[in-house]
Amino acid sequence: MNVPAHPAIPSVHDTEAVQAYWRARADLDLASLPVEEIDVANPELFRRDAHWPYFARLRREDPVHYCPASPQGPYWSVTTYKDIMAVDTNHQVFSSDARLGGITIVDQLEDFPLPMFIAMDPPKHDVQRKTVSPIVAPDNLERMAGLIRERTATVLDGLPRGETFDWVDRVSIELTTLMLATLFDFPLADRRKLTRWSDVATGRNNRAIVASDEEWRRELLECLAYFTELWNARVNEAPRPDLISMMAHGEATRGMDAREYLGNLILLIVGGNDTTRNSMTGGVLALNLFPGEYDKLRADHGLVASMVPEIVRWQTPLAHMRRTALADAELGEKKIAKGDKVVMWYVSGNRDEAAIERPDELVIDRARPRQHLSFGFGIHRCVGNRLAELQLAILWEEILKRFDRIEVVGEPERVPSHFVKGYTKLPVRIH
Image (cartoon, rainbow, N blue to C red; front, side, top):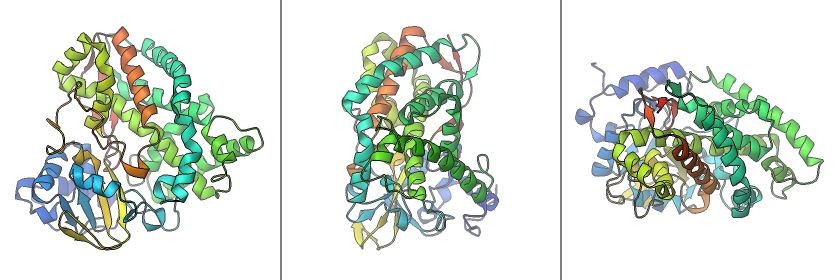
């Protein structure tokens, strides 16, 4: 396909034009594309699973890369493990503040900001995070393990044998949504609303999910209305060990306005859903792509402990996090100016050959399986990382008790997103 290297950059609010632009850019020949014209924030590359050579080239040729022209506006791409760590652990220079744009490459809407504690800097970040962190404390995880195992067993026992079904819907979504409902003490009968709100929250520019910014706002306000009823009930009751009650009674959170409450709800819904959900699917896919590792696992079930963080690394469920420079800075011999948008591509850092041996392969018995960036580093490291690992470990322990093999029988369908690196479908068959 003959596509000009510099087509007009459409407005990020013109969804159809932007999607056509991304498709055209994804058809270009990477080998003949000048490095300065690379724009790795192309959702179509992620949908096609075609982003890998782009990041490999940037790591080789321009590891701190400036993209001057993109529908998202100009931005820096940080693509190596060491440089990502340098940004992620320096919140004094690289800010997450929603008022500066937030944590994703796409800026928050000026008239619909959604402050959340991951999109805050200290000290406000620290006290809000501390309010909800007891729900994933070790003693609480130990109490939840039995319920997680019981639900996992029920879901797996209900799967069809010898016929094709969608692993994403029947297992990954169902298990993570049940867990989310438990964390919020949310009505189980309505639990798929949580799945929908998670998809909407991260799908603002995906017409397959929402047709416009107006629809995106409307559905998120429906989420807020539902959770406001739950808040009003919990605030008048004695404190309970669920996330809504924790926020309603927490000193740092009980005075939140509606928009900040919605922002933190979205953070907790997406954080509790997408990371685990897409790792549950990614693990099945990875073991099919690397059958020798599947054989290794079947021979030694004890490898689940090291396999789980390796799956999270290999999948990298959230492709990036964004920061904004609070001052002029230097990174990788590049001059970053105050106010510049700086994007840490975790998906690239987790495949950095200089930091991780055989990074493109799933290796379930790695010596240091937790040496990865998927949960972030520094003050914003994922608060629920141990819960995610617990859910994944229990899932694979229960799978190994029941099934000899879960076979992928068709191509996965991937999310067209440069933020959520996940799946919409994975056809499988159980033997």
